[in-house]
Amino acid sequence: MTMRPDGTRLRNLTPIVQALPYIMPRRFDAQNWATDYVDEDLLRTYIRQKRREGRHVTHMSVLVAAYYKAALEHPKVNCFVMNRKVYQRNHFCFSFVLLKTRADGTPDETALKIFLEPEDDVFTIARKIKEHIDRNLQATHNNRTDRFANFAFSLPLLPRLVFGLAYHLDLHGLLPRKIIDLSPFHTSLFITNLASINTSCIFHHCYEFGTTGVFICMGRPVPDPMAPAGIRKKLMPLGVVMDERIATGIEYSRFFAAFSRYLRKPEVLEERLDGKTTGLLAAQR
Image (tube, rainbow, N blue to C red):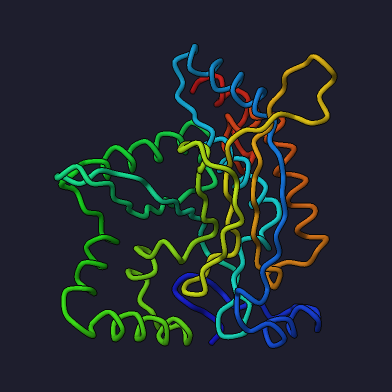
C-alpha cells in the first residue's frame, strides 16, 4: 500500500535503507540511544526574559519548537516504519504524558497529543500546550484517548480484541484516521519532562505499537563538568532514543546539529518555524 491515512510510502530509497526494516523488523530492534545537553542557564534566562515581556514560554515549548523547526528542514526524522515499509508522515505532532489528580485526590496520568503547523512559533506552541494541559487537568475531564481506553477496558477480553484489531489494521494501513489522531503512540515525537518531577534523565523506549520514531526525555539539570573553576553552570540532559531505520546516520547528524543550534539561539523560534514570516509581519505580531 503506497498511502496510509497518516503518510505516504517512500520508494526512492537506497538498498540498505530499504533492507533495514527487514533486518530489524521490530522498533525495539532498531533503537539507538544518545545523550545531548541543553544550556539550562541560557534557556532559563530566555524564558524569564520572555515572561518579563508578557510572553509565556516553557522548557517544553522551546524544545518542541526547536525540534519541529529542525524537522521541517530535515523531514526524514518525521518518517516512520510500518510493516517493513518506510512512510513519510503527512503531518507533525508530538505526544506527552500529563500528571493529573482524580476527583478523590489520587494521582493519575493522561496522554496528550498536539498537532503543529509550519506557521507555528514558540509562542503558539506554548499556548497550545497550556490549553491542552489546562483542559485536561480538570478532575472530571477525560479526553478522547481516555474515553477510548475506558471503553476498551469496560469488558473482559475486550482490550485484547480492540488493541489486537487496531494493531493488525494499522499494520496494513487500514486503521481509520480518527483512531490514529487520538492515539498518542502515532506521533512524530514523544517527549517527557522528568525535570518537572525532579527526576534524572532516562532513555525511554519507542513504542512498538504506533509510529513513534523519536522519544526525548528531559532530565533534572546537572552541573556542567566543563565549567571553569568557581563558575556554577547547569546543563539539562536529554535522553534521546531514535528508530535508526527512518533516517541515515548523516541525516540524523544534520538534524540534531540544527536542533542544538536552535536551542542555543531560541530567539529564532519566535517567527513561523518554516521561516516564511517576513520581518514586517513579525514586527506587527
